[in-house]
Length: 188
Image (cartoon, rainbow, N blue to C red; front, side):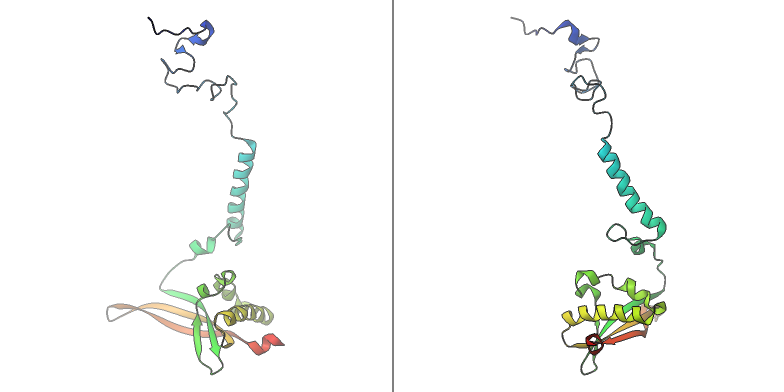
């Protein structure tokens, strides 16, 4: 008995029966249409929706970068574009309690919307008094939720410098109060 199969004459070409891969480097079913379906070019192009989506993503990433816009979460250009050297300026939130004691508040302790509070604070030096007060009051509201005994918030500009002393690297601090606001001012 023979194990031969009959194949229609139209399906046999120079490479052997179509779709079986015999005599061909192409995988089975990889005819000119890409799917073996006989529809030439059916899967040879990227769908229009895919091209539009890729184009939109590129525009959303490139345009803010070129124009210098911070459209979070699409961009984080400031995270990677700021130069780092021995002198840095940090912006600090200081909570003041009723006895006059102060404690530095880490923005990571604040609600999610305040995690990048350093960015608007960095603009306060040249901002109007109304803008300074608005930013300070927004931070004060968040700080009071985290530190319930807070009666005031100081926004500090801390000039930090990395210096070598006796063979060790030490960070020196030179804080300056840029703006202060109190709970009493928020009530009025």
